[in-house]
Length: 276
Image 1 (cartoon, rainbow, N blue to C red):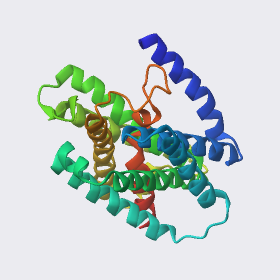
Image 2 (cartoon, rainbow, N blue to C red):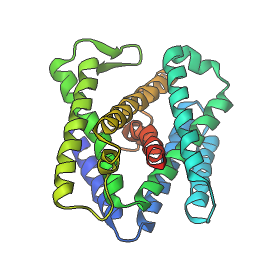
Image 3 (cartoon, rainbow, N blue to C red):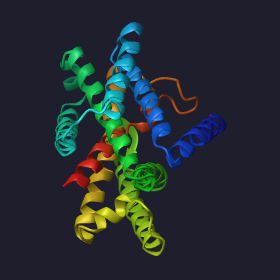
Image 4 (cartoon, rainbow, N blue to C red):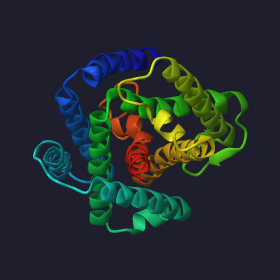
């Protein structure tokens, strides 16, 4: 299993990193559309949709996102990000408070549409972040990846008290705190390096630091918390569907949503913070 995970991760990075740093963002745009299409397909499948509706959901989110990205659709992005942030925070509080039962009480069409809409918003945030510079986007990705890896090892080493045992038995408070500590350390190192070698596009950490140290720390705590929440929300949906993985698209890793669940709320929330 570990060998398979490593091979898949290397293959993904071999495609992702060149697209990320390529001077033209078009290549990354195509990758974004593919990512969101696969996520839409997985989301519909997790809610029990048939093959036709699942494929249609993947196609729909990719077409809507393509229109936002390439068709010259004019939007007031600040309003979009504020709306997306409010939706993510309110939905997260409601879902985690109500649990699996509360989620399944909603009509399936509402759950499907809500999830697809949030996927489009996260895809749009991914694209908009890339347009601001690959360093800026990489810093957001690094925040999520660091929190995830540190939470895993911190939980393995010190984890005793479960964070949400009914949703994700493997997650612990020690893991969550380890993830936050690692993100703050990453931000410190990144800022130090960026002060010596300024990037063409300032990182998320540099932009938050412009608000002042305390506000930057609060923003990082908020984003790291929402990364954990994104992971828990997907676990809740999978538990309601009786699934271990969102799909088998990524050998050794499960599905696309299993890899990007923590990133989905963080992207629009980071863009919201940048719009303030």
